[in-house]
Length: 308
Image 1 (cartoon, one colour):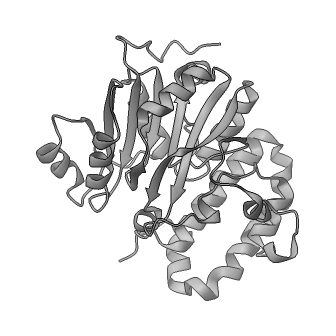
Image 2 (tube, rainbow, N blue to C red; image 1 turned 135 degrees about the horizontal axis):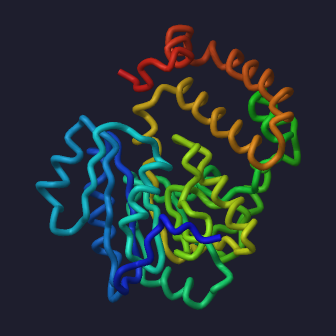
């Protein structure tokens, strides 16, 4: 059933680009300029919603790009999913492109995404080719397979080398130059059909604060009967390491675990958490020697998620 809280588009527009910023002063300039350079004839809007940045991001946007973007400012960090859902309510496009602030469109045009989506009504989500800042494709930037319960156990206990069926092994068989249907794409660049969002009633499940909301969305899209397409003719540089560097590794790990717990409860059963939760806790302990006791304790107390 369609959620009536999500407004229909008020006027015809091809694409609504939505970017959530939080302490993104280092990368947002490149992101916006690459969007401007990568559009030809399509009509688009770029909605940027700032999640309580204190590094000067909103001030920079107001000074440099106020005529090129629509800026929404939150007084605090409400989370990635909630901020995207907030922006979606303002979006007018037939398609929604969720673009992280650390993305730099390097090759291809966004007009091409619209052409592909128009020609493939069976596609609900479309992703592009992601490369590192030195323009090299890396397996960790490829589309992924949807996780299984056993794969969570393998990753949390750092047993990946001993599990031949783990999704990471699939990376090395993946052709990053071929357009193909995949199980899941990275949330840093996601082009969504508007009808998908209207059917779900949200862009991302608001229970996810940060991390794993993209995996959940891919699962939702497939549940609705849509396909997910990898489209390599648009290439983006992903500066993810710059953005995630502000968070301490143990804090990021705990956020990921929280997302996994929501995902498992939603798509499997809360009973599975009875045996997964102790494994997650053990996985945290196994990583303490690498992180350090001080940083690990701060993360457990939910204090100072940022590195100093």
